[in-house]
Length: 218
Image (cartoon, rainbow, N blue to C red):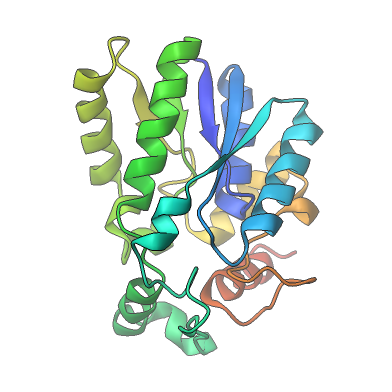
């Protein structure tokens, strides 16, 4: 099955890309820039990953998303949550963090744009990078959401494009292990909410990433 891959430059999407290549052809990798703090870093990591695999890559600008949200990912006046190590497994703390970084219908917008590319390019599926940890607090990372999105695309695409994620049922440690088996160059990925010179190591995304590396024996 040929795919259009949503590539953020992070761990989940990088490993999903590698699995998509094992399963079939990847026609295009798409990265979205909507004014997020890490936009340049995400685009650079995604470009490096696409180049590593010899794939076409395109960055799509969506400036309107920044204008309709106060999320801390784009609003420098809002603090990005910096959870303690014990907060990662707290549903209440994770839900609070999720609200702070929520972007209205972000994944829905990304998936529908990618589905347009998929239909026009003859690709049968859109591949996303989701995970079981964050699905607990981000409903648009869940299996139910992907099933509903695929069902909707049966009506909005003549070719019946579907949506799937090869990492959706895995926690972050499991995704690291899968990535190692697939030979993913994890040194390229950018899992940080910030766009500094190095990974901050303090945001929730970084903390989950480094915890996963440790749990996977890296």
